[in-house]
Length: 386
Ligand code: SOE
Image (cartoon, rainbow, N blue to C red; front, side):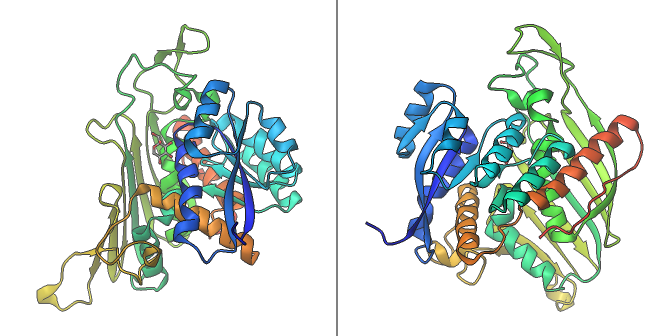
């Protein structure tokens, strides 16, 4: 029996994200042995009994439920982890906070700012620990980018640009709704803006400060798809692609693009930031590397350096193997679990928390409004992301 304090987790939702989070909980005790808390996979919940039972067995959950309200009534649960489609985030998060549970919520926080605001109010009123899974922040190379930017090495920032490109929805026969809830505007809230650009916006505002205003275009390339709920051809309400540019508070310009129709790209998240003295770029397909250009290098050897972020003095890397050996996508979730447990231990915040993610939501909403009205929109972002 371990002498650690237990953090009993209730996972709601057994899709792709349910697996990434479960893997995070399982790995943490092995690789972060110093933490006072250890996650306990107490209960997993999903409507389909056969599926949730199989998931519980596969991932080692002690029990399962088919009704999330029952989960919240249980007094053997400390934290609720929401991995459902976006239309259920608000209802579950608010009820979980009212039940006094800690809440971990998949991104985006909500479908709209109005929903997100209610979630923030409920969480802050209850005073429960909370976080939102914008996992890409916790890839070691991205965390290193944050450290370099915060050290001031880049000087005054002029440009920030990011892409998130996929191609999985090009097929016109793909349905909307049901398992394809990301294609259904009522379930998802938006298309690539909330699903993919939200990641880019979270990282951007964390690295480069608040976004003031945006001008966007969106497109829905396939206008109608069969809806799983009605079995009929229905109008598609999501944005299939979105491009926006913006002003940051620090005076720099931002350029963002996302599409699910970029043939050949599966999950190409790239970001670049250009300062007066130096630049940084990163690419999810080569996630252990950070590219860095420093204008103060001696001119004859000056050029882009490719930093292999695997050394023990680089973020998180003393937890893993030996220098030179890399980590992957799944480690970002392990790191988020570890940081959440540490925050509970020390009484600090695990950023991005609900309030941070409400700011990201404000930018997403301004982007959609700008595209719909063909006008610049102020984002109304109130606080700097931490
Ligand atoms: C969509 O395909 C998706 O799974 C997003 O929902 C995730 O947030 C992103 O990290 C990868 O792509």
